[in-house]
Image (spheres, rainbow, N blue to C red):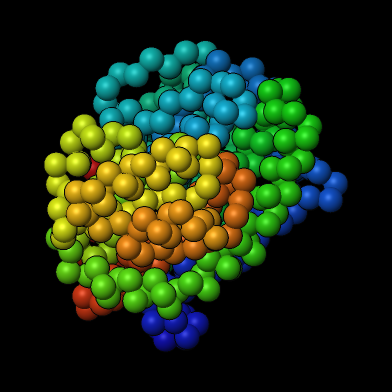
Length: 369
Ligand code: G6P
């Protein structure tokens, strides 16, 4: 087992550190920044169908659902198509409206999650077209899909999903960028810019990983917290949800993710000196709003931790602790801002002496209801 972990103490840490390679492998042979092209067999063959889709419905569970939520924001922005994101377990039982012209995107690492599988079978029987974004080659969901794109992240062993998530996002972004350009809803200039930005992600994730030692210190500092709040806006809102999920899975600290502006509608009642509030605060159009949200937390004596774009002096002044990541286009930034949150969860679990690769009561692949 020590050899399988390639010198890392846990699979989770190994898989977090594999992300530059996982994203690179996912882009390889598909995205060509010099030529300005994205080539994906499964998309290219069905481009007309995707372009003409009246609606896209994304189905998944857990971390895969979070990738779907971010894909909703990105697809709607770049492709101007209505998107819905559904928890597979709800979608399968609630008699959803599925019309001709709806395309379903299934997101699953294992390709074996029972709720997702049955939800897709039902939708397929109603005539929906199923497009799979799956990691495990030849898995049940891959076989059920009529078209798809593998994430090529390699085997993921740690129960908490890390590299599969960034690879799912990479695929979903490529789909959105390609589709948006082909629909004409994305300008040539922005298309080329986003392709360039995506090609830089592996190196930027590497830079984010270089902060591991300081994140370990923060994990030790905050390990005794009873609750954590994670806040983000826009493209970083799904990352706030994912950061909270990772922390609760691995450290058993209760954590909630919220859209930052929603905090006044509930979570603010929890703010006191012992509550760490993590802001996913990389620079984007909402930045000033996030700054004032962080000030509200400080005014109520909460502790502010923030993932920020490097050299954000203002946030550094407000926050108790910051973690810097390299600058990126705001649409692409979540692929990088999630990495420090994965590390925070890992090191918190480690500090508490927990079994980070096999947290209690959780399963890597939930093949029963
Ligand atoms: C379980 C795993 C999660 C995963 C979810 C969906 O809850 O512990 O890490 O995100 O299932 O799994 P899937 O294989 O369909 O992506």
